[in-house]
Each structure stands twice: as structure tokens, then as C-alpha cells.
Length: 114
Length: 115
Image (tube, rainbow over all chains, first blue to last red; front, top):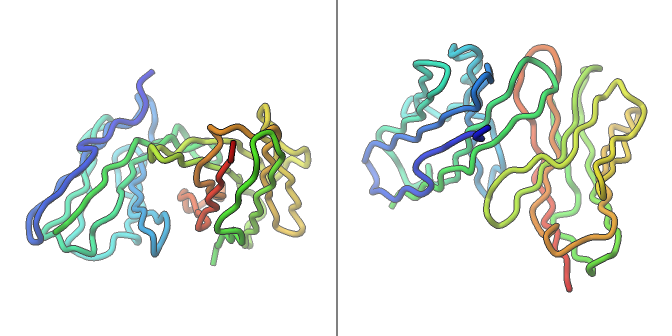
């Protein structure tokens, strides 16, 4: 089976531009997570969905960030307008079921805001 | 608050040696899972090993094993017969079974295996 698929792998854009990151979870997984990785803050959860419904978005830094999951096989994380401090690696992960099942990560999107 | 602490920012050993990475965590929950993830330079996050908190037996996966001490809230990773391909960042993480479903990560240990 294919793993979690993220696109693009790299994104370089100028401050103020809209950025959209995409994720396709593993088929059959009902949980989807968005994480951000920076040197200063490490890996931190931004938001997660269960059955396409956002459950906890307390990690979303501010209103410039939004995430959607229109169906079980697709999610987006959007930043508008982008700022240099948004530069990071953004990971999407998915999992089947509640509890201790492992989260499977995509390869991440390295985002650079100039 | 739920936290994970990895006290060794960097470690370096020779190939074929055994190395142990430390991890402590803090939670008031009784039911949770613990994980070690590996992140090589390719940036992938790869699950290395998983431990259920209700199991006393330490998990093992080939050359990887853990020493889980629930009372001490300690969860160390031992890599035996280390290989060059083990060079990576290693992250300790946990998730509680009920309630918030997120993984809480430590800051990571950068492990270098030297030839």
C-alpha cells in the first residue's frame, strides 16, 4: 500500500503569498494529523482530524493558518498570508483507529518563505 | 502538562557498538503508548519501536530494544550492533489512549555512527 503522500516536497515563495500544502492519507486511516517541525520548537501538532472532522486545532498558530479535509483521501493546510517565520518542515501523518496505533508520516514539505 | 525530555542532544559511537538513548516523560495518565521515531537526513519520520504502557515486557525489534520503567517514567532505546544506516535524529514520543490523540515529541537526539 502507498504511504502518506504529501505535495509539494519543497516550496519557496515570497512573504505575503498564499501557500497550500497537500496530503493524501493512507487508505482506511480515519485520523489525520498536521505537524510542523522547526529547530526552535521541534515537532508540534497543528491540527488533527477524525473522520474528516477537525477535532483539535489548538496548535494552529494564528488565523493565517487553516486546514480542511473535504474527504477521507485529501487534506490541505493553507497559510495566507505567509510570513518568513512560517518557514519549517510540515508533516502530515495518518493513523487507523484511536489509541496507540502508530502514526505513519509523509515525507514532509519543506517550506521557505523569503 | 505532558512533556518528553531527551537529555542527550548528540551522541556518537563506532560502528558495531551498542548505544543507549535516554528519554523521560511526564503525564498524569495511566494508559498511553510510547514510541521511538527515526529521522534520517532524508527527512522521513520512521517508526522504530512501540511500547504499550500497560505491558511490563520491554518491546524489541531486531537490533532495537527499549528499557521501559513506568514508575520512573523512563523509556530508553538501545541499539545493538550499530550500523552506519542508523545515523539519524531519534525522537521519543508518547500518546495517551483516551482524549487528545496527538503525539508529544521530545527534542530529539542526533546519533552519528562512525565507520
